[in-house]
Length: 155
Image 1 (cartoon, helix red, strand yellow):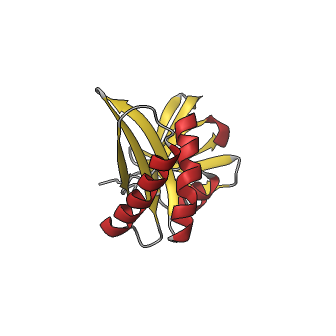
Image 2 (image 1 turned 90 degrees about the vertical axis):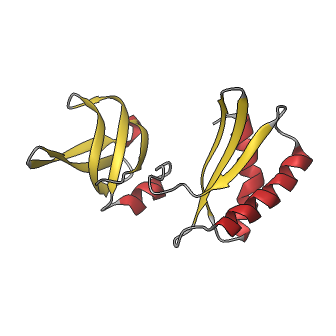
């Protein structure tokens, strides 16, 4: 995590806690010539535009006061969407029974990407049931080998 995202996390956490929201992720990225600071928030029933606006307004004030970013940037506060990233242990626990997409740092059974139903997570192993043609196969992925993971929308 970069210094900018760490600082932003410290600034935004009390805001989302006060509003009974969850901080899902923070990105600080350069796209083209512009910098973007993206803060993703959520709650059990989903967030609406007013909640995103409120967090954006309160965070803007704190960012202006702390001034942790030396460049001009665009602040975006939004919901993580249907394909929400799985970053923390609790995200994996909540995703059990749901469709997921997982990339690993190194191959497991010759593969580095897995899409299927997350059937189990015990803190050390992520178990995904993947479909191969007409049969299903259970794949156990060591948690420390997960490069990134997200919920998956499967049609």
